Length: 108
Image 1 (cartoon, rainbow, N blue to C red):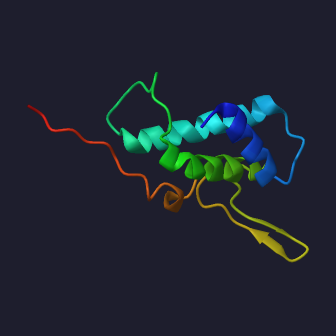
Image 2 (image 1 turned 180 degrees about the vertical axis):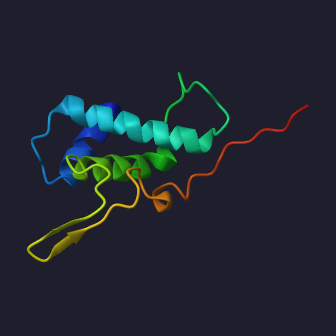
């Protein structure tokens, strides 16, 4: 899927938020790095690799999750007018990448 299509879908996920396109692309790239890191845990360089189409939905969800936490990264607790927020980890939840299958190859 093209970056243009991903940016359009991410923008729609955010209810047409007027977030700058460059910011959306950065968060999509960060989400791609999370996915590729999970797919290739022993690889140092992801240059030339792209997120497979089967994981684009996960990439969009991760980017949306990270964008929604902007300004409250790593927040441990926030209570205001009956709203309680706790973030145990500053990173994405493990459940978001649980379906990503690591790539493996036989050694000859």
